[in-house]
Structure formats: structure tokens, C-alpha cells
Image 1 (tube, rainbow, N blue to C red):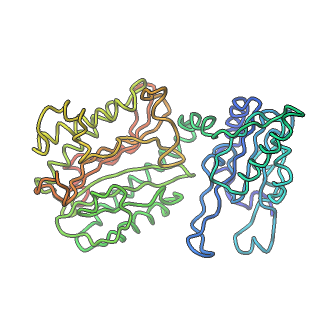
Image 2 (image 1 turned 90 degrees about the vertical axis):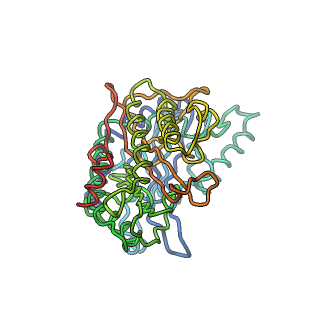
Image 3 (image 1 turned 180 degrees about the vertical axis):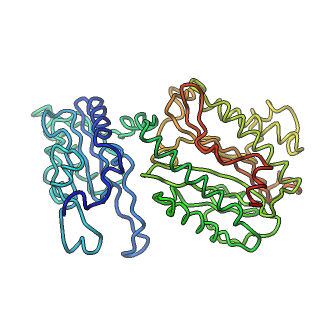
Length: 446
């Protein structure tokens, strides 16, 4: 079977994209080595597999998405600096799970200096690691590879008194990869814009479909099917359809309740395109009109979202963005009569956390909660062009909570957009989906 028959290579990225990334990592490695296994196949029970998704780090550096793949990048080597181990061709296995590339085709497709069958990993990896200073490898993700890395370290300690050769320790690969991944290039942003556009279109379809008597699971099915129908990989994470007081559970995913008249529905969903995620939340009234209490809470959250989006610009810090949201929410809670006192003091004493317990932002990219530090040297990190983060303030008035006023009990509101930091400020990737309360009501009414 030819390479061209095994699906779109590299998710449409040109090979040069991955080559450039590997070159930067090899330069950063110095005399070290990076051992990067793909994500393992996981089972829900017995031989029933969860849908497979490749390791984000492996894909970022190689384009490979096939289970079992292991990449080795050798900064200390003069030859075979990029080596792959992949599953061999096996007609019997491929009958069940589909065709494999095999070592030779994998070497050609992914631009490796050498590629070997996966069963040779145990024999070859110690030699590939030998002579390196440190091994960059994430512990706890692949038992087989971790065992080999640990074995190589033990051998190095035994040889050290005689030869003085390493490796001498293990480092998390995030130190090499996270800063690369947190800055998105133009090709990555193309996929993220496409994922955002698909998600926006899906929300426009889903909001009018939410009516009393509809199951949360039915709205989830509509959303997930719409993603696939539009050409996305599927949902980037488990779709949240939280009606009524379920919206006060931050990561509610059961989606098992029947929507009732008068409910708000919090819909938190995002499509993935070529593994790149989007992440949108909208909260809307199934009746097509907010009650006065619902609108009051919604308008506070919407004001916080707008303030936080305006705070996104190069040089602003992640904490400043969060502070813009928290300040607006706290002022709103005072205006609603939920809190009393000066907003500044209430923020210092974290009184808002009873109703807003989470952060305003997370990085977005290959993972929905993408890699990247939020602080450096004890200080909040400054935003830079190419970073993508969510803006997602909320207020949650859980029934039965001691501080929840009766008139707001069961109301949960979150509004979330995806924002790209640009040289001139920001681009709201999800801005085509309205957030103003009148516009939300109009979308629900169709």
C-alpha cells in the first residue's frame, strides 16, 4: 500500500513545519536527548477502546498520530538525530484496526533519519540515549518507555566511575516544548479559526433547538453531530449541556436532565480541527426571554467578559486580565445586593470566590487546556502576540449554598470567547457569536 492511500499526511501541514520545530528543539537540547512516546491506547472495559487521540507533543514535533509511535531526538548525536519507532506492518492486525505505515513509510512521511519496528525499542533505545547529558521524558505516561529510560540511567550510574558518560537525570519535556506551543503560527491559527467558525455555526443551530422537554443529551448529540458534519475531528472535549441548577456545577458532563420551562441552559462546547481546539460557552433562556433575575446576573457576567477581553493586549499580564473580570463581577455582586462593602476590600478578602471560584482564562491550542506557564519568577506572565487564551467569567448561585440569595438560587451563567493576542491588541476568534442579552434571546427565538 502506498503512503498516499493512508489518509491525509500531517493533517495538511507541510513537512517543513515539523522540520523547523524539530530543528529548534534539537538546538535547545544541546547534549541532551528527548524521548517522546505517543499516547497509549486506553480501554473503558475489557477490550473496548476509547477513541484514540495522539499525544499533542508527538504530533507537534512529528505529525505522527499512529498508536505506539515513539520519537527520539538526539541533541548530542552527529547522525540519526531524529529516530522513530512505529508499529510494523501486520496484515492480521490491520484487518481489525486498519492499515499501518510501517517503519520505511513512516521514515519517509515524517522525515525521520531512521525508523525501526516498535519491538526493537528495548534493544535500541539504550544505545540512542547513551552519551547524552539529560533525558527529557515525561514520567508516568508510558510504562514501557519509562522502564527503559530508568534502566539507561541505572546503567549510566554504573558506568560513570569508569567512563564518565551519561545520561545523568530526567527532565520534563515541557521545559523545551511549552514555550514553543504557547505561541501559535499562521498555520495553527488557520485551524483554530476554522474550529471556532464551526463551533459558532453549531451554537447558532443549537440555541433555537433548546426547548422545554428536550433532553440535555439531545442537545449534546446535535452539537457533536454538527461538528462532525462540518468536517471537524469532533468535540475537543466533552460537551457540557447544563440546564437549570446543573449550570452551577462547573464541569457538569452527565447531560441527563430534561430541560424545563424557565430554565437557563449553559452550553460549553468546542470543535477540534486537525487536533486544534476551540472553546465557547453561552448561557441562554429556553423561553426565549430572560427573567429579570436571570438578566441581572447575565448582564454582570457579560460586562466582566467585555472588560476582560479589552484587557487582552501585548504586555498585559494574565493576572491583569483576571483582575479585570474579578473587579467587574465583584462590583456587580455589590450592585445585585449579594455582597456589601467596598469592591476592593471584597476582592482582597476573596468574597467573590463563593460565586466565581475559577480563573478567567486558560491557554488554548492542541489541547483545550493548553500548555504554558501562567507565571514566571513569581510574577504573572505577560501576553505576547500569537498566544491564544479563553475569556470565561461566570457567576454561579448554587441552591442550598449558605451565601446564595433565594432570588438567584439555581442560576448559573458563564460566557466564554477565544481571544488571540495580536501585535495591535487582540482578535476575538469567536466574536461572530453574539453575547449581548438581547442578541442571545433573538438567537433562541430563531
